[in-house]
Image 1 (tube, helix red, strand yellow):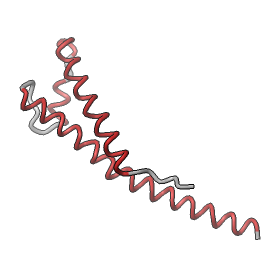
Image 2 (tube, rainbow, N blue to C red):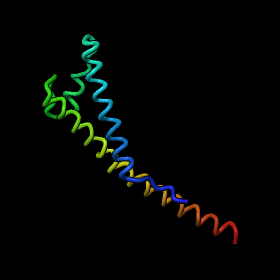
Image 3 (cartoon, rainbow, N blue to C red):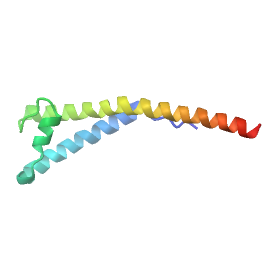
Length: 98
């Protein structure tokens, strides 16, 4: 049984999730300006300003990039620990059943 996770799948899924979250947060800021979150985006996304088309698209690109950053760190770590756990499990099975 293959328990590893696909880097490409996690990269695109997390990137699209963060991109859509950014878009929804920008829409929320327009609908409820008293509860605006744009200051958080300014801290998290280099070069982001409130709001111009250039800044909006920069936020989309940077959000997408953060998703890949997450995937490039998390997936190899996860796959490493899964394979390590499977090797340890195989050793226990061999010693148990001999």
